[in-house]
Image 1: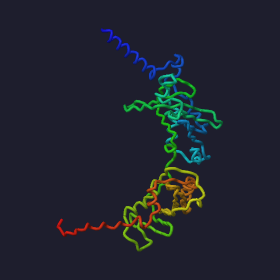
Image 2 (image 1 turned 90 degrees about the vertical axis):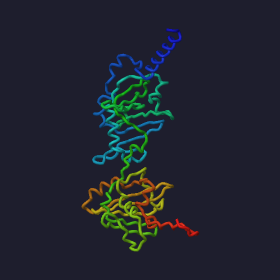
Image 3 (image 1 turned 45 degrees about the vertical axis):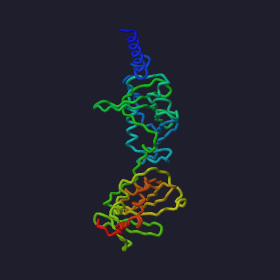
Image 4 (image 1 turned 90 degrees about the horizontal axis):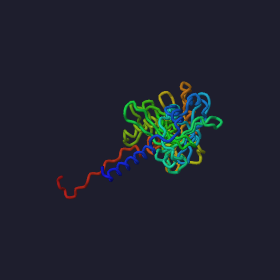
Length: 352
């Protein structure tokens, strides 16, 4: 073999070793590797989660806080910066379950200069990608805390997901086995469902918008405009939109209700269902955003349902998609069938 070929082989060997050092097994002590490889990152955490009172997710120096809310049957978790508005139970349960099942499989780099390549750099870095997840008890003592980096999702069957992790205050990184999805974006955590009333349950809708009053009632499989009785032809799909207005109604954002006198309303609509449930929706604009206040009432026969909805709705304002305005607060002008376009003139009288 020529000297040049030998040099190339040596260089390739060095590069291969370097890649294994950066992303392969790290230089952790042998006794620590045998004690931790394949073991749970947080043994016994599942039993201690009953003591959890606060969850923190830090990303790029900003911390999102999820805290316990309510007592008894109304107990749950909410976002601290949204006045403890509820988070999605499914998302929170998946995150905590993933934390209890996380297993440390392989030690990786312990070089602080290389941690960013695995996504486990300092979570306070303004341009970092890592997330610091902390679960605290009522006294503020951590039950579990870990820096989470890049995930590795395998497409093959029966191959578990994995994620790069690092314990806060330690340089040693690990490849851990388990599905643990964490995001500091409140939109991925907040419970976006407001309420849902199926279209076929809506019997009447009363709309008041400035000086305009509209009364809709069910006729067969759709709503029709009863008052005013004399009106121009209306687009059928617009009437269908009114009937579907409360079907899976979701929010973009939420906040504690403010003084209703501070912002003049666009108007209000009362949707009445077949069982007597009445949903009153008041719409108003805050800048360019559409917001709603929602209240419910009903007869004694559905008292439990009304109480449950009122607990969720009272005292809150919900930001909605702007297109929902025409469904929740329709106007006669918006519903009219547009006039047909005039036929093009033919001054020469020529045949087409």
